[in-house]
Image 1 (spheres, rainbow, N blue to C red):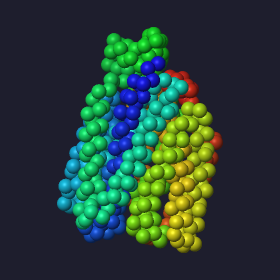
Image 2 (tube, rainbow, N blue to C red):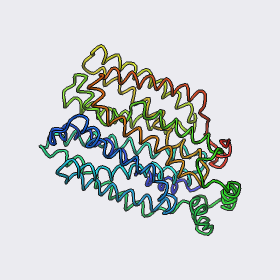
Image 3 (cartoon, rainbow, N blue to C red):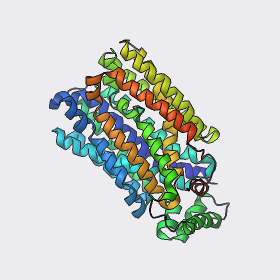
Image 4 (spheres, one colour):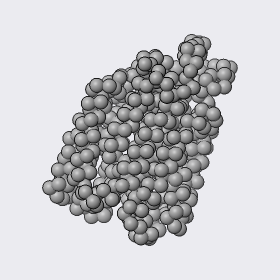
Length: 440
């Protein structure tokens, strides 16, 4: 097995996750500057200015399976880089909230499609024993992008009234580098067999992946699944009810933890807890660092202990940390307690949902429907990721932070029950075996 080559291709594709993470969080540094600049109400600021990228992710997630299937994984990944580049350049030059929102929307499209194309590509080139770690490189890059965005925002925060332009525009550099690098990867052999019937090219790529093994065995398994699944053009058949429900619930619980709402408004939330602006930005950097450290731990453990074990750990950590955050706001505890509780929250997310979600969704659907299944799970994730942060400033103002975080805590009790009762383990199984075991 040519692990060096597989790892390189996987890390290049996973850099789409870096752009995802950076784009998602970089707006947090510009949050208050933009609201002051354009004199927006809390509702308009949340729904339009702050959440425009998230509405783009919804559209990208809903429709992203079409280019992923029809253009191919590689061409779609290149298009994602172009969208991020346009978004970075456009937002840093915008002079009104509408044009700003339009360019943020383009970046959101890139995020939404990347959550389909990147995990699908890596899962299709990875050996079963290493698939969890390789697909989770996408999540590692998401959190690395989040950390870099927090650090970048911290150092750019005091350079003047146009600091927000530099915060957003600097993303053009990694977007350009990613686009150039992804041009050098091969197409997914599974996609070539499923959609192009190009056995010759698929054989070449499979030989490059593992020159010591006859690729005909892999090709036979892929074509056999295709032969036995003549109706697999439609995702919403009774046959695929189990993977659909699994994708729905893992995506649903991911967002009702409050993770995106917190990442978008971390400095604002810390200021509510009594921290000064510089301390709130510094605490945000701490969040990014904790996220990175525990994502590395999660990536290292996912193929050893399995997806379900990590979800148990993450669920318990969520419940404890969110419960403490809710109590802290209810009792008006000030200072560093709230950031410390959020450090636990981020650690729980990184080692559980963060490490597992994109791996798990990429594993549970058959080859022909992998992109469509990714699109479904990603759509659920991003619809909620758009709605929840959009109303975050408004709900905190109306019902208070304590009530908001109590709700998130209750939802995580629900996640723990779901993991125990319904979530299967996919560790170490071939993609074909996983999809066969989940048919109704």
